[in-house]
Image (cartoon, rainbow, N blue to C red; front, top):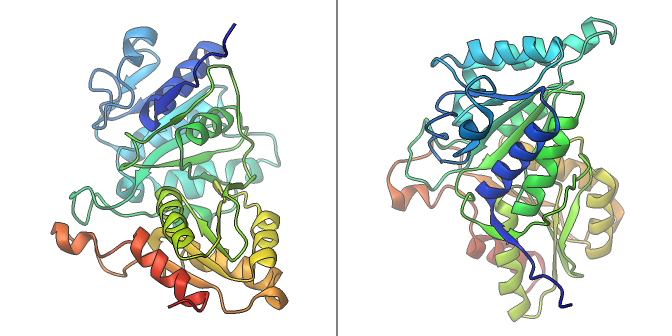
Length: 331
């Protein structure tokens, strides 16, 4: 018999399928957040879940991020495995006490007797024309806190496998989805699978320069790599997939192989993810580097509403292409 055709899902469908499968597998898994039930979130990612699992497991909450995140922490401590939905990552500011001072600390402050196996799903990413309060990429904040794991998937395949692993993890995990990627399509196996947290993925093999990229910037890096190939430059694209735990070994090995590195992230550069990743590479591959590690992140301004201005604030295929050409001496 012929092999079945490879199945493709959108990023949003992969997230929804992961949640549905985990809720069927484990009755302790539940979802709490604003507009997660009948509305299916503003991005319609969760559409249909309330019809299958009911309003006792897909729970619309009041507009109080601190309140329902705190409910999630308590539910996790008492045996549930809640998935908390914060519709825009900018609203993490309202739940930081619960995540930073409660979820991240409970295991340590109880001498290991308590745990908080919860997932906080939220978004990042600009260029949606949502202005300064709905367009930031604030994942670096959570990476800074001991006790939290931070996941940034870049493909539908990664999104499903990493979310299932996050739900099964015994620690609080913050799961960032780029809101501009929900329609991105890619192959997703029909069978059950998980992807381990803390293992990077080489999305494209190359020999002349390494592009370390996170979340939506992985797609930008792959586009830049295709442009570089046309001018005779072989770019390797490495996706950390989780910024904590961080697969430092894979980043360093790639840097040692290519001797040139650009780190690309949609968060702000100042004290950001690019700084940490660049530091890891610089310390681990210092004697193999031909040039200093270059960082590319969001411009240090509030994200503008103007489309023309907003598009200038984050790295693009063209800007990464030009930077890579310069580092390779092919300007």
